Image (cartoon, rainbow, N blue to C red; front, side, top):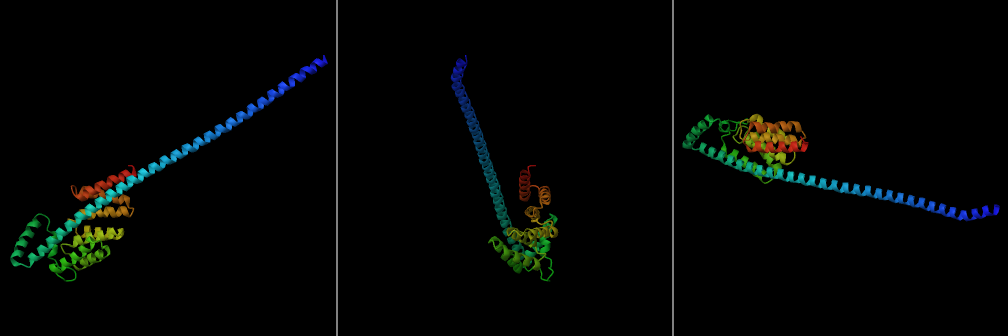
Length: 273
């Protein structure tokens, strides 16, 4: 009986040992599979992160491209606006010179006085009247040749991009002929010369001086627009928005009003409002 039991145990032990080894191998296999699954899961997360980063970079590139396009359009508008201003300045300068030449001719002077009276009736006599005044230095603003020559020198400088020289010449013109018909233009281009060199505080002051001294000038809409632009450059966003809105409401139908509305729309898009 004891021998039979011993024999049964001898036969059963190898089978038990084999089952234990198989069970251990299965456990190892499961652990290896779990580790592999974790590795695959980690690799998947890394791939997802890389895809998200690539998408983010693509979106950033699109945003930068849109910003570049907006800046290009803004620069184009500024160039067109400056070119138009330059043309108007040349026309205004030529008209002032012709009026001054007529002042030296008695017959033409009589006709000029009649034209001035008609212009005053239309509400546009400010420039014509200021041309006949005497400036603070005692020099008659009716000295057309000297005044026109001084203005032409300054205007030629700003057209050539010599902004430092232009600012010096326009300031000299203003000091010598503060009440001349071209004084508002001189204040405006003085502001432009400072604006072009990013001296925004002084540019802002020049445009505001024009508006303060010559509120009825033809340059007033453009000067008010440039006040808004200067405020934007100085990070005075709230004041700039108010100024641009004032341009649009005060001078409807003008180029300045159109540019003010465009800039306001861009500001709203940028702020997300």
